[in-house]
Image (cartoon, rainbow, N blue to C red; front, side):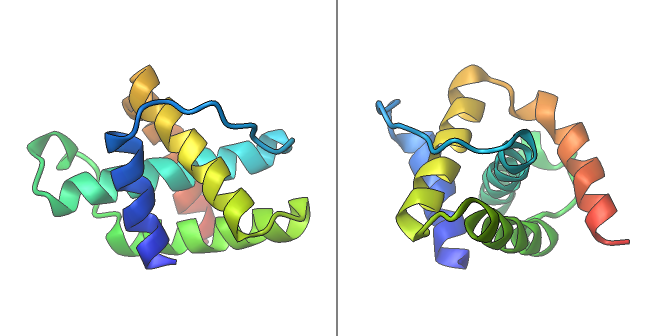
Length: 118
């Protein structure tokens, strides 16, 4: 899953938008995937020592664990296979990057991360 995390972050930054059909997911599933993608993007930029991402807590470990658990949960509950979850995560990451909404979702996602650690 760590390889998927790095791949997702790199793909979202490097690839143009693709016409992909996302599976129908609940609002909760979308939030889990969106935060997973946000954590992957931030962790990727933190590892690259991008000063714009130093404002966030280190997310390689904690965000990676959230990513793995959330992905597994959505796969199980929504009946997705690995290619489908990968496509859904890529779509979320792409939307965050291209929409410029990463910073806007981070406060909510960090709250969700804290809630999972209790």
